[in-house]
Amino acid sequence: METNFRAEGAKNLVQEFQTYGYPLWVLKLTGIAKFGFSGMLVLSLITPCKEMTMLGALGMVFLMVVAVASHIKVGDALSNNGAAIAMLVFSLIVLGAQQTHSAADLVTPYDLPVGLVCACACLAMFARSYMNDDYNLDNYEKISAREPFLQVV
Image (cartoon, rainbow, N blue to C red; front, top):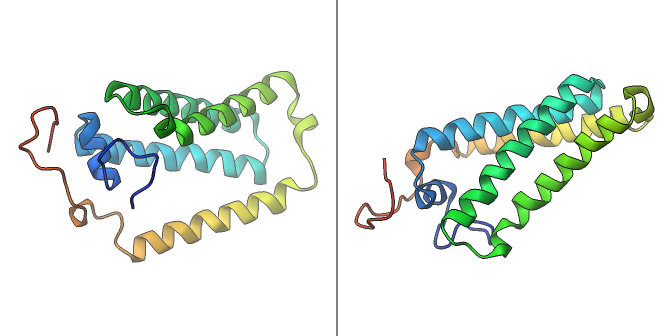
Protein backbone atom coordinates (compact mmCIF):
# COMPACT_ATOMS: atom_id res chain seq x y z
CA MET A 1 0.00 0.00 0.00
CA GLU A 2 1.08 3.57 -0.50
CA THR A 3 2.42 5.39 2.55
CA ASN A 4 4.32 8.63 3.14
CA PHE A 5 7.31 6.61 4.32
CA ARG A 6 8.00 4.89 0.99
CA ALA A 7 10.83 6.05 -1.25
CA GLU A 8 9.81 8.94 -3.47
CA GLY A 9 7.53 7.71 -6.25
CA ALA A 10 7.16 4.14 -4.95
CA LYS A 11 3.57 2.93 -4.61
CA ASN A 12 4.36 -0.38 -2.90
CA LEU A 13 7.18 -2.25 -1.19
CA VAL A 14 8.36 -3.91 -4.42
CA GLN A 15 8.73 -0.52 -6.13
CA GLU A 16 10.45 0.88 -3.06
CA PHE A 17 13.15 -1.80 -3.12
CA GLN A 18 13.51 -1.28 -6.88
CA THR A 19 13.99 2.46 -6.27
CA TYR A 20 16.83 1.65 -3.87
CA GLY A 21 18.39 -0.53 -6.57
CA TYR A 22 17.98 -3.77 -4.63
CA PRO A 23 16.99 -7.07 -6.26
CA LEU A 24 13.77 -8.72 -5.09
CA TRP A 25 15.66 -11.40 -3.15
CA VAL A 26 16.83 -8.61 -0.81
CA LEU A 27 13.17 -7.69 -0.21
CA LYS A 28 12.40 -11.31 0.67
CA LEU A 29 15.45 -11.63 2.93
CA THR A 30 14.58 -8.35 4.64
CA GLY A 31 11.03 -9.55 5.25
CA ILE A 32 12.25 -12.77 6.82
CA ALA A 33 14.75 -10.88 8.98
CA LYS A 34 12.15 -8.32 10.14
CA PHE A 35 9.72 -11.12 10.95
CA GLY A 36 12.38 -13.00 12.90
CA PHE A 37 13.83 -10.07 14.83
CA SER A 38 10.45 -8.56 15.71
CA GLY A 39 9.22 -12.02 16.70
CA MET A 40 12.14 -12.30 19.09
CA LEU A 41 11.17 -8.99 20.69
CA VAL A 42 7.54 -10.06 21.09
CA LEU A 43 8.54 -13.48 22.45
CA SER A 44 10.90 -11.84 24.91
CA LEU A 45 7.87 -10.10 26.43
CA ILE A 46 6.15 -13.45 26.94
CA THR A 47 9.25 -15.32 28.10
CA PRO A 48 11.93 -12.85 29.23
CA CYS A 49 15.27 -13.88 27.76
CA LYS A 50 18.06 -11.30 27.68
CA GLU A 51 19.89 -12.97 24.77
CA MET A 52 16.75 -13.17 22.61
CA THR A 53 15.90 -9.55 23.41
CA MET A 54 19.43 -8.41 22.56
CA LEU A 55 19.53 -10.34 19.28
CA GLY A 56 16.08 -9.05 18.25
CA ALA A 57 16.97 -5.44 19.10
CA LEU A 58 20.42 -5.62 17.47
CA GLY A 59 18.88 -7.09 14.33
CA MET A 60 16.29 -4.33 14.17
CA VAL A 61 18.98 -1.68 14.71
CA PHE A 62 20.93 -3.10 11.77
CA LEU A 63 17.85 -3.24 9.51
CA MET A 64 16.78 0.30 10.41
CA VAL A 65 20.27 1.75 9.85
CA VAL A 66 20.23 0.15 6.38
CA ALA A 67 16.70 1.52 5.80
CA VAL A 68 17.76 5.07 6.72
CA ALA A 69 20.89 4.77 4.54
CA SER A 70 18.75 3.52 1.66
CA HIS A 71 16.44 6.54 1.93
CA ILE A 72 19.46 8.85 2.01
CA LYS A 73 21.00 7.03 -0.99
CA VAL A 74 18.04 7.92 -3.21
CA GLY A 75 17.71 11.46 -1.86
CA ASP A 76 14.45 11.02 0.05
CA ALA A 77 13.22 13.74 2.36
CA LEU A 78 13.86 13.30 6.07
CA SER A 79 10.11 12.71 6.57
CA ASN A 80 10.41 9.47 4.59
CA ASN A 81 12.73 8.16 7.32
CA GLY A 82 10.22 8.67 10.14
CA ALA A 83 9.17 5.05 10.63
CA ALA A 84 12.72 3.70 10.32
CA ILE A 85 14.13 6.32 12.69
CA ALA A 86 11.38 5.65 15.25
CA MET A 87 12.03 1.89 15.14
CA LEU A 88 15.78 2.53 15.35
CA VAL A 89 15.31 4.69 18.47
CA PHE A 90 12.97 2.16 20.11
CA SER A 91 15.43 -0.67 19.41
CA LEU A 92 18.27 1.37 20.89
CA ILE A 93 16.16 2.02 24.00
CA VAL A 94 15.57 -1.73 24.37
CA LEU A 95 19.32 -2.35 24.00
CA GLY A 96 20.11 0.33 26.57
CA ALA A 97 17.60 -1.09 29.04
CA GLN A 98 19.11 -4.54 28.64
CA GLN A 99 22.60 -3.17 29.30
CA THR A 100 21.74 -1.13 32.39
CA HIS A 101 19.34 -3.53 34.15
CA SER A 102 19.30 -7.19 35.00
CA ALA A 103 16.61 -9.30 33.34
CA ALA A 104 14.83 -9.69 36.70
CA ASP A 105 14.57 -5.89 37.07
CA LEU A 106 12.82 -5.58 33.73
CA VAL A 107 10.09 -8.19 34.35
CA THR A 108 6.66 -6.80 35.21
CA PRO A 109 3.27 -8.47 35.75
CA TYR A 110 2.11 -6.93 32.46
CA ASP A 111 4.73 -8.62 30.27
CA LEU A 112 2.83 -11.85 29.63
CA PRO A 113 -0.56 -10.29 28.77
CA VAL A 114 1.02 -7.54 26.66
CA GLY A 115 3.22 -10.07 24.89
CA LEU A 116 0.28 -12.36 24.19
CA VAL A 117 -1.80 -9.48 22.81
CA CYS A 118 1.12 -8.41 20.59
CA ALA A 119 1.68 -11.98 19.42
CA CYS A 120 -2.02 -12.45 18.60
CA ALA A 121 -2.16 -9.13 16.73
CA CYS A 122 0.95 -10.07 14.73
CA LEU A 123 -0.42 -13.50 13.89
CA ALA A 124 -3.75 -11.98 12.83
CA MET A 125 -2.01 -9.48 10.53
CA PHE A 126 0.16 -12.25 9.07
CA ALA A 127 -2.91 -14.46 8.48
CA ARG A 128 -4.84 -11.60 6.84
CA SER A 129 -1.93 -10.78 4.54
CA TYR A 130 -1.47 -14.44 3.68
CA MET A 131 -5.18 -14.86 2.84
CA ASN A 132 -5.04 -11.69 0.71
CA ASP A 133 -2.05 -13.18 -1.19
CA ASP A 134 0.05 -10.17 -0.17
CA TYR A 135 3.20 -12.28 -0.04
CA ASN A 136 3.01 -13.11 -3.75
CA LEU A 137 5.31 -10.44 -5.20
CA ASP A 138 3.99 -11.09 -8.70
CA ASN A 139 0.78 -9.33 -7.61
CA TYR A 140 2.55 -5.97 -7.32
CA GLU A 141 3.07 -3.36 -9.98
CA LYS A 142 6.77 -2.97 -10.69
CA ILE A 143 8.65 0.07 -11.93
CA SER A 144 9.36 0.14 -15.64
CA ALA A 145 12.83 -1.04 -16.64
CA ARG A 146 13.14 2.07 -18.84
CA GLU A 147 14.33 4.16 -15.89
CA PRO A 148 18.14 3.86 -16.04
CA PHE A 149 18.95 4.42 -12.35
CA LEU A 150 16.90 1.42 -11.26
CA GLN A 151 17.97 -2.18 -11.00
CA VAL A 152 14.92 -4.23 -11.93
CA VAL A 153 14.79 -8.00 -11.56
